[in-house]
Image (tube, rainbow, N blue to C red; front, side, top):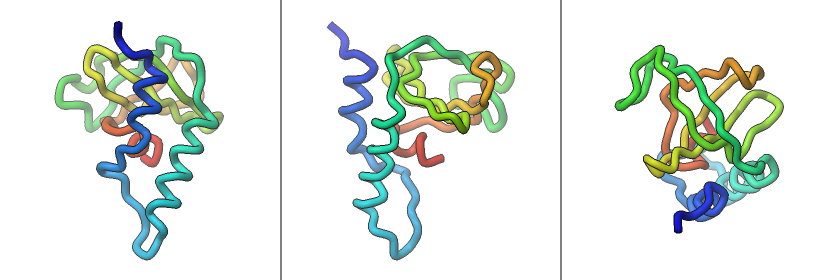
Length: 115
């Protein structure tokens, strides 16, 4: 049995790869804050699609559509999406759920949420 998207999300919240933070900042506090913010905005997974925007993705051309399971989103238009078939998290943007853009940001949930 495959893990649920939320189980995958929780397991990946310790991956800090690629997450930038200001020089002199408390990295652990920053990472903990990002994880807490994701948890505060987590939702029951639902299918969500977005149009690939520049710069695109290595496996998805600009103008195509990608989709996955939304696991967290906030009112400012930040959507964290998990693609089970690729075991990958992506960031979609936009305030209109039916017209989102995916601007080439993928990786760990913390990296995507911090973008």
